[in-house]
Length: 310
Image (cartoon, rainbow, N blue to C red; front, side, top):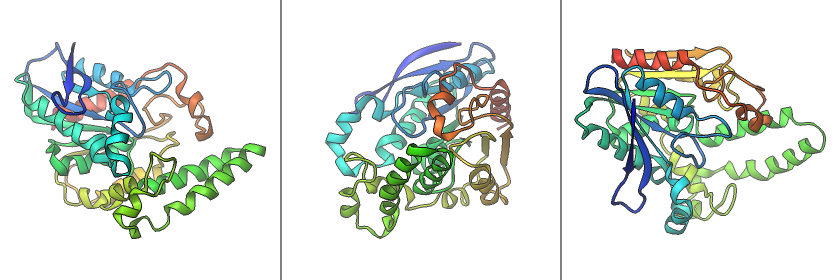
């Protein structure tokens, strides 16, 4: 494969360094994917402690004839600048959506890429957003949702906090309860707030405002998926403690039960980044991702087969 340095959003206020990975096997034009990050500030490899899932996916797919773009997340490169420019008005459009659309446009303009076979691969929050990104200008050939959730973000956060509390003991549990008691009431009435009120109401710290959640949750994932007739691939590890098989994977199945081209893959023993589970304990996140390992080959193989078939 070849990995070419590119800039997503070149000439804009927020240029992002990235890599365009092109296969050496097979023949151009190649099918291609745009990788979309999960929550938080992430580099182009989606590095979490000692694991780099986007690097693994990009290189693995290239060996199977599929090109890709991955890039540093806007909040990773321009976090302070974004806070200064947007303040409480920050939404996932500025954080993720716009750059994914720009990356897709770059792929379609490359003669080595089949412009009719550009797909989105969203991990975690990126998976949650994938249907919206497609609807708001991505215009992808199909959607791959990795460890995503059809629930609103605040509902996922509530569930994660409850799970964390159940794993804590002693003084840590007492601290966790105090933090939860302070945060949970803030989620009530988000959608009854005016936009201006939501832009001034923090939920984590002075840089995270309720308007971010309000904008993201104003239209449910189900509303996008129920009108989307494109091929959809939903994938999750059954040892993922960030999302739930019952509340997320199975809910996608319910939403897409009448979809003519929806595929579902659940992987025993794999975690949120599709690597073998280490702890399976949400209160030990650092330990879960501090063991150097790679995305399971079967997941890469399944994605490649699905892409070539669509």
